[in-house]
Amino acid sequence: RDLIKMAEENAGEAMRMMKAQYEADSVKQEEALSELQAELGLPRVPNRIECYDISTTQGTAIVASRVLFLRGVPRKSEYRKFNSRTVMHQGSDDYQSMREALTRRFKRYVDAVENPESAAPGKQDRNETWRLLPDLLLIDGGKGQLNVAVEVLEAFELMDKVPVASLAKQHEELFQPGKDFSLRLPRNSPALYLVQRVRDEAHRFAITSHRKQRTRMGMASRLETVP
Image (cartoon, rainbow, N blue to C red; front, side):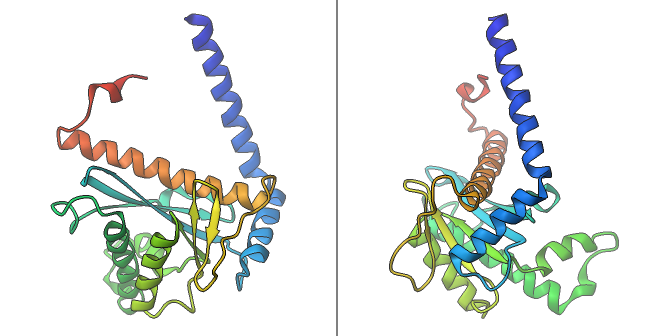
């Protein structure tokens, strides 16, 4: 057991070092961002990427996560979570949960732009995270989740300002509005690795927030405490 534990710790440390080295390599980040811009036909380099994911257990403790990557690197100070307010007693509905989270996000954008002085003293940075629009809005899911994002952007008249795409996990396909076919990036593509990292981080953050909420609600399983 001691040898297994030591091997796990060594592997974890090696992974952390590799991740840190990758994130510190600005050349690799720029390469991935430029490739992603070209593949998706984006109007600008996606230096600011927001990604959204939903985590739930049979319609309870629904949490939507937002992670933000700045120039290819996670910016954890701008991570946010949205506890569902409208779906809690209506059964599981990932589409409605995503609609609620995105609506709340872009409503905060409108509030931050129209009432910049509304931020409390010392909280201007919180206003800033809502005031800045993403260069790419990435949704975890397929066409259905993408359609929800498009509906919200259209409602706020932001379709011409916020490029949006969804990433479906089964085949790692990217879907975009108005395109009949999905986009599959090459398996060794830096752009694919980037969107996978962003999506996986949104999923990790959603799961972590979801477990905390379940614990507060007294729903956590004893199995979840097993390492």
